[in-house]
Amino acid sequence: MTIPPKPPARAERVSLWRYMRLFRDDILSAQPARLYRAWMAEFRTPFFRSYLCNDPALVDLVLKERPGDFPKSTRVSEGLRPLLGQSVFVTNGATWKRQRRIIDPAFEGGRLRDTFPAMVAAGQGAVTRLARLANGAPVEIEEHTSHAAADVIFRTLFSLPIENATAAQVFAEFKAHQRTQPVLNLAAFVPLPRWFPRFHRRKTVATARRIRALIEGLTAARMSQIAAGTAPDDLATKIMTTADPETGERFDTAEMVDQVAIFFLAGHETSASALAWALYLLALFPDWQDRVASEAAEVMGNRAPGFADMGRLRLARDVFRETLRLYPPVPMMVREAACPEQFRGRDVVKGAQVVLSPWHLHRHERLWERPDEFDPARYATENGRDGLRRAFMPFSAGPRVCTGAGFAMIEGPLLLSMLVRALRFETVTERPAMPVAHLTVRGRDGIWLSISPR
View 1 (cartoon, one colour):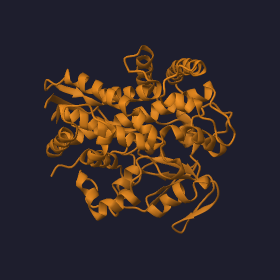
View 2 (spheres, rainbow, N blue to C red):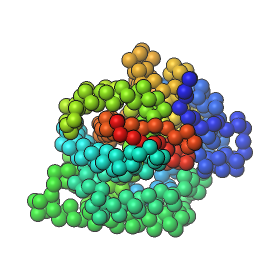
View 3 (cartoon, one colour):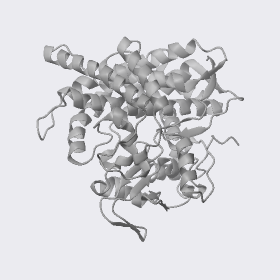
View 4 (cartoon, helix red, strand yellow):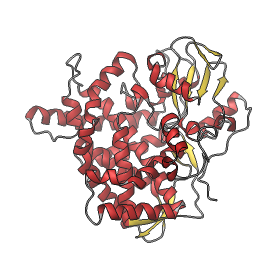
């Protein structure tokens, strides 16, 4: 039986120094195998305690029932500050609530229909680019899914195709920024006062500064278009013209730059990861690939897909859902206990780090049948439906659920269907994929596939 790749677990006991080295290389293989069965695990270091929670009741407590008592930990976001500033991804409390009140209306259901043609155009561009490579030679597919996801972001946010000079420049700078960005910052392991320097790499700061300057140019130009009444009706215009219903305030240019940075990071990086793994899984399981291709041909024929088609692409949705279960783009989320707590009879001190791991929850041996197997049909079973309710959170959950979750669940199945309708993807035997997690779950040495016309 074919089992999708899964990183090896570390030895049960290792020194803190060894753990930090493993963690720097890959978050997932730095963890012990017992986390796939444990309801909770405690980790102690000289600097902090952390509690990984897989118990669905604890996950609900932290994310849904009392999210205010478990704000997002600042430690994990320290390394992202040069790029993200005070974006909605890193803020807490009143600031975060105000940002969400302004941002959320742009991603409501009706707006998804409005952005759909831009997604389709990005999908058509991806099919055209990959069709040129459909000669059976190995192709590193993450590079191309990254290109496609960036195209979706720019088209839906600023009505610009990825071929636009500024969009292409942001995309290139973002790739350079990713190469300089370590998963660990000193503040992730050692509690530091606000005034203490964070020692970001010089190249990390430089690429972040260039990305933000490019985004600021786009944002300022859009501000001028809005003032002149010539702005296109896209996500950027919607967000920049939405007033906070409580204060009447709108984002200024600096605040909008922060938000666009996280839209690009979250919407581009996570979508690229999910689409690459979905194509890899379909290459690994060609029967499922043929079924998704047949569904796409039946629903869409030879025409461009319409928004109404998405409800009929059920196999593509379940394949994408199963991809998110096996390879959640964001493998772990970290919250902080704002007051003393008790988890499963164990005292949790104020300031302790509370780790919620979609990676382990999605593969938990007590919650899922055959948790490491690829089986999109599981969602028609009682166990699969129960898993979706209790143990599936690729976009987080509760008030801090990802703003773009609905967007992603349209984008992923759409692009997947468009690609396999036109092209066939096969694994490259000499280049097997192995997941590795830093900010997102990607292939350690890339994800290599061969492509041919269908």
